[in-house]
Amino acid sequence: MKNALPRIKSGIKGLDEIIEGGFPFPSTILLAGYAGSGKTTFVTQFLNEGAKHKEQGLFFTTLSEPTQWMLRFMSSLESINPDFFGNEIKFIELGPVLRHAVDYNQILEVIDDHIAQIMPQRVVIDPITVLEGMVEGSYRQFQYELSCRLKNWQATSILTGEVVAGQQYPSEIAYTADAVLILSHELVDGQRKRYLEVMKMRGTKHATNRFPVTIGENGLVVESVGFI
Amino acid sequence: MDSSANEQKGQGKPSPQANIGPKPLLDTLRKELDNPIGNKILITSRSSFIPKISLALLGILVVEKHHRGVYITIERPYVYMQSILKLRGIPISDIIFIDTVSKLSGRVIPDDENVRFVDGPFSINLMQDVPIKAIQNNVPTKTIRLPEMDFFMVDNISPIYKYASSTAIESFFCKLTTFSSKPEQKIIGIIDPVACPQLYQLAKTYIGRIIPIQEALL
Image 1 (cartoon, each protein chain N blue to C red):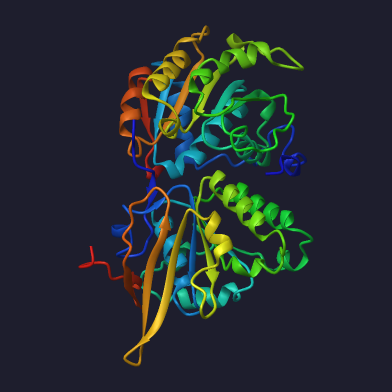
Image 2: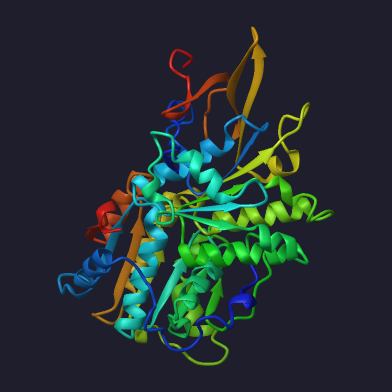
């Protein structure tokens, strides 16, 4: 008896068409990219899509930027409904926890507590990479534990990862993630062009092209039409 | 997950503020659970809603109806649902958890009198017997007899197909739905029919009363 994995819509126009209809549910996804490549826009659309269908979203911010500033910019996108903020999409600042945590178990317990309380179907941790320095020596163990727990809570989770020049994605997280998506940008004829590539998605026959990405009033769009 | 971290939370009597689900969902489930037509119930839903439906069902059965029952988890360790219940003040002492994944995943098996562990979801041939054998033969502190159980609930049947053969699954359904010696005992399965249409068709032949839970109820 063979059947497809349950999937949820990504909320990114043009993406579901190249990943068999959506992200596997539950699963843990690494979304890697340089600063300015569209990671936060991507994950906000992901949560917004769930909220449209009565799915609860939980957005953990780490040490990226204050939540109110991020929301201010996201609210300006036509595709984002700000009425969901604080309701169907809840925001949790992990910064204070991270500053005082003695070991990674404390961080995991705080995440567990919030998830058990809210029971979200979609979770975002943005960015996860700041934790590397805090759980030095146990980073892979932490990632493994986090990935297992997020799936066992029955959520599809996106962990964003900042990369630096020359680095494609944070490899420690990629090992434990079920999927790795890379957002990138490069100079083409004097203009910055954005791209998305699906490097890995377990249980999914995904396209292997590098697709152009645009970010406009309608949010982040993967230009996959004509490629598949 | 460190289950001891949750030990202090929500133990004891159910909290009057316990939030076990949205009102439309609870009203629908209450009505269906009280429906005398049949006690073998197959609830259908999108996979992503199943944890919330499970919580609502357990809340109604245990807190409101004061039922005692068996909760079988196929794909995730029991501690997750247990901590969700504790957090909401739902008394877990009235639930026997049958966990098919913790041993397989190499987790530390906690010493918990309310839990029975199966070697893995692959051993579904064994699992079909577990609800009976585990309860009758291996209860260290009190004897819980199967005929006294008010409900058997399988939380998300859908993943079974990934681990077991059609024959084994059919045998499991057959056992699950025929061992009841108490006419009012409820057998409840929850499934995502879209994710697993073949399994849904099979489950329907054993658990005939279908209750679809749509997005609007959540």
